[in-house]
Image 1 (spheres, helix red, strand yellow):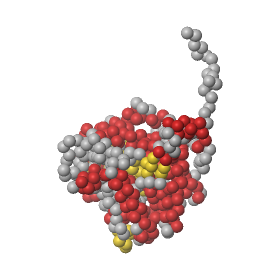
Image 2: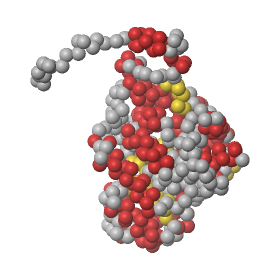
Image 3: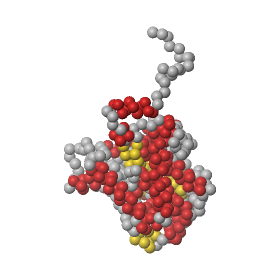
Image 4: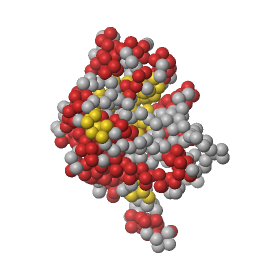
Amino acid sequence: MDTLDFEANLNFNEFPPTSTEKWEAVIEQDLKGKNYKKVLSWNPENELEVLPFYRSEHLRELSHFPKPVRASGNWIIFQPVLVKDIESANQTALNALQNGASGLFFYGEPDAISSASDVEQLFKDIQIDIISVKFGSEFSGKTLVEGLDALIDSRNLNQNDLEISVTRDPFLQAIFSGKLSSKDAIEKSLKALPFSLNIDLSGYANAGADIIQQSAFALAAGNEILGLLDKNTSLSFNFAMSNSYFPEIAKLRAFRLMWNQILGSYGSDGSDFLVHAETALWNKTQNDAHTNMLRATTEAMSAVLGEADSLTVFPYDQHFDEPSEFSSRISRNVQLILQEEAYFDKVADPGAGSYYIETLTEKIAEESWKLFQKIEQKGGFYECLKSGFIQDEIHKSRKQKIKAYKEKEKTLVGVNKYQPDDLIQNLEFKIQNYSSAEQNGNDFEIETIEPLNMEVELQKGDA
């Protein structure tokens, strides 16, 4: 055996490049003459056809330059904290921060925070100037704002230095409640909010909207709000991540490209907007609940590889029970493992330059932009909610999604395949409250949508 020279330059002459035509000829031969683009292609989402392989030449066809969409690979680890009792919520939050969380997401019943003293007790011993804080839409009313103002003043903090955001999405609240406020009332409500505004796309995803629709709705809703407020208003966008691994990565990347284009048209450099991600609820199971940990892990990976600025991994029992200490710890540890052991935070946009992911990013951007333009042609997001166009789009996607899982064209382990022998007959699906925030001037009644849980839907279909 010859002695290896590790200092020698590598020579790949014995591996000459192979053209795409030669690859296709071999594939066609293996498939006995069948067209591989028809036999091996797949549709992970509506209007999104994916080929079985991509090569460098596909990058030359892109309209966007394949480069990192964000400068850093790091993200904020948000821990969801249920607020029913203020003292216990404070202890849960402290425990989360002591064990790796860098952000807190508070959710619960609207009346759980009823005074400024409740806000002060909620943040007892918590340094809000070194962490990120998010509140669900149920806590976006006057009581919370006044309580936060009092807390900030009492601690002599500068509000501009704090990372506090409140989910007040009047469009999402309207589509679940069936009550759409006038534009003047929405504008007044949003301008009265002193904290960062979070546009919530998770509700549409958890009602059945596909990836294309989620991206287009984010563009249209964001554009509508910029039209009501100052064009330099800082917005954040909250996306739910589901089990289509690579398309979900591309979804966030495509949205960044498109939103930067919209901001550019307003004369902004696009440096102020943030993308938050959370694991989906519609595809989780109660019958085989521990499977949810695996599904949430791949969803978390999609989020951070797609360059989310922050992430919430919901506990595996989130959709049917009050999360236990164990399930909360596991949900937090998913992110800690991705950072501390898998080093996902050490590389900025690892999907940049990938033939497949870049092409998928382009496809999603193209289809989403078409739907966004269609919404704008119909008068914008507000008018499309009034007319029911947005709701009809979601209902259409929802039906297709249910059909695909019911007929097992798509698989959800523990939901429509590999289920336990003893199934729970009366599933407890806690419907997430997207419409509980304060309403102002409910002038119009509109068509509604409702949260989807695939396991409940399929069991209903079998009854």
